[in-house]
Amino acid sequence: MGYSYCRFDCGIPDCEMGSIDLYDGVWVWPQGLVHYVEFHSVCLPYEFIQTMRSHSWRVPANLKLPLPDGQPPLRKVGYWRSEYEPHLPDPRDFAQPGCYGTELPRVLDYLKAGGNYTCDLLLPPLEARLAAKQRSWPQRLMAKLRKT
Ligand SMILES: [Zn+2]
Image (cartoon, rainbow, N blue to C red; front, side, top):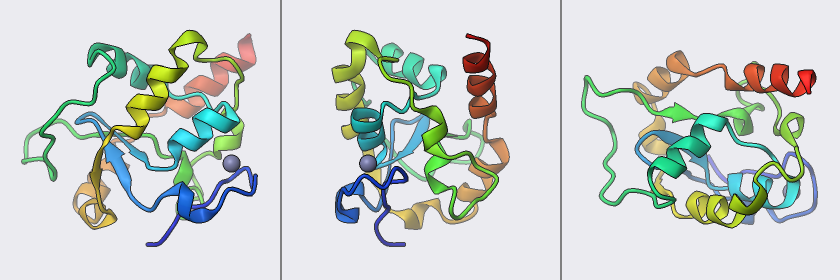
């Protein structure tokens, strides 16, 4: 599927945005997500940060994909794929400077340390399962931001 690109069009080479997805056994995110967090202050779902905390800021070892049938589906931080899936929101809508406070270095390390797998493993049926179970965090986050 090739390299991703920065949706903020900041000039970073596409090859530095990555071409695979990472995961921690609960969440799936693109290799390039760390760039959005580090350079564009994109705020992640609260539940994702809670998962990082519950893992003591370390991605669990020995992660396996695909999941056996019957296991809970992975949660997907999906906005980076909006060019393929127009119903997904744009990461630029989630820029919120300072949203991580002093936890920023731990968040960045966690995002970089995710288990690797290639796009091949995200082909159906796992891809379809993820899409079907996608949580509505972007809408909820935007509603929260509008209130504050
Ligand atoms: Zn950028």
